[in-house]
Image 1 (spheres, rainbow, N blue to C red):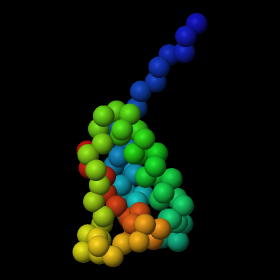
Image 2 (image 1 turned 90 degrees about the vertical axis):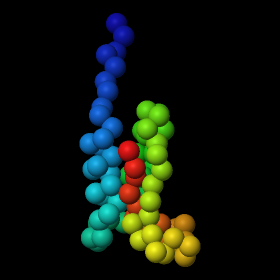
Image 3 (image 1 turned 120 degrees about the vertical axis):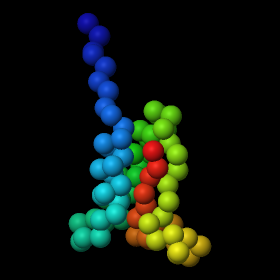
Image 4 (image 1 turned 135 degrees about the horizontal axis):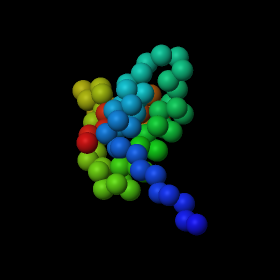
Length: 78
């Protein structure tokens, strides 16, 4: 017997992920944010819902190094 396919709504997941990426507490590490962003991007691309993202500190856009906390502090569009 084939497994039943499960679906998940994308918007609640995107909203949750955006909140996680905006966090600044000690547990919101770069590794945590990279993981959240990577999973969300995979889901959005698979669902043909990827519309890009903006950096939360947009005034620093030109100066944001890829491996910095500011780079991963972002908001995805729906």
